[in-house]
Image (cartoon, helix red, strand yellow):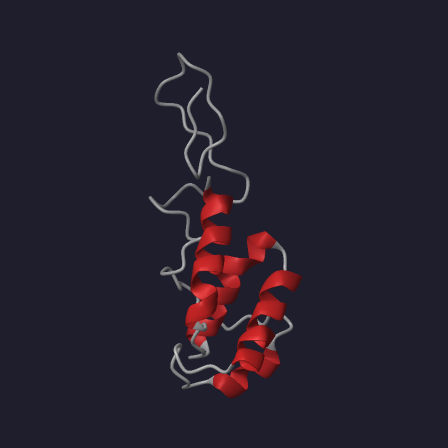
Length: 114
């Protein structure tokens, strides 16, 4: 069997048949649902995190430990499939993700893509 991040398993011998994941439209090389760079929609979606807007304009390397914990709390109280959308939302709101959380976020998103 073969599988990529956007496909459901396909039996050997059925080459050329790609069945997109139910959550993915299959129209893009990289699934826009999970892509951090594909902010196709400019509509801001909030993840019960409106309080983070007060950090707009603060560089990612200047957050204090209690502030980082606010971001971490939001990150770990959402579903894993919401993380990429949350990061896009932060980007659209011009709120930088603290450097200390970037590895954790990319790990969560990377595991979802596998």
